[in-house]
Image (tube, rainbow, N blue to C red):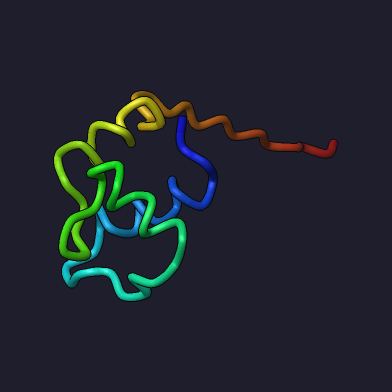
Length: 68
């Protein structure tokens, strides 16, 4: 299970075109040790770690309040 900070960093890395900066942070170092980030970019393992959090279906609910 990812921590909130790990999730946020991996999510950014998955969308980023450029490598992540801030390689000195403990969280990024741990993600590198876990094999989720390499050379500042997300790896296949990192993408797999995000998969359980992916939204597969979204339901839009709208409510209109009418006054008569």
